[in-house]
Image 1 (cartoon, helix red, strand yellow):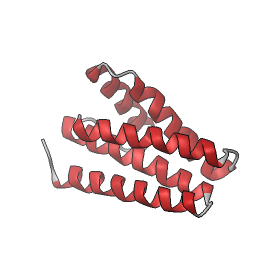
Image 2 (cartoon, one colour):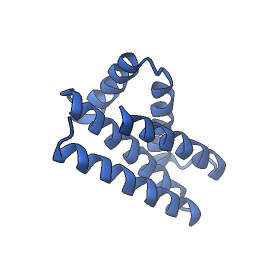
Image 3 (cartoon, helix red, strand yellow):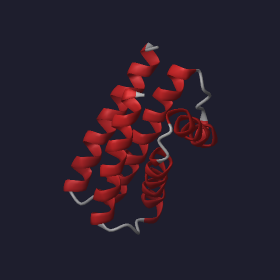
Length: 118
């Protein structure tokens, strides 16, 4: 089921990924990291929305990831979302290298692609 809200989340996720890559190319690792987290979080919200799962706040988003991983049998969703969580932390701590941010963003892109098809 696609709704206007689901479309909004999917569009927002794509925009955040685009901006994450721009920030990364500019060397702004905290902003690249936060946009990567945002892309993953709203992609989960989109998938949760289509299933009628609650997705308000961090706890419910993480619970939705667990449900999606169980539903699809794709346990990699948990790990990829975990890397998105590390990007979120990096926004505040700025301890990840550019290479790590780039690698984690690649995993987030894969996660978003999977969730768009879920």
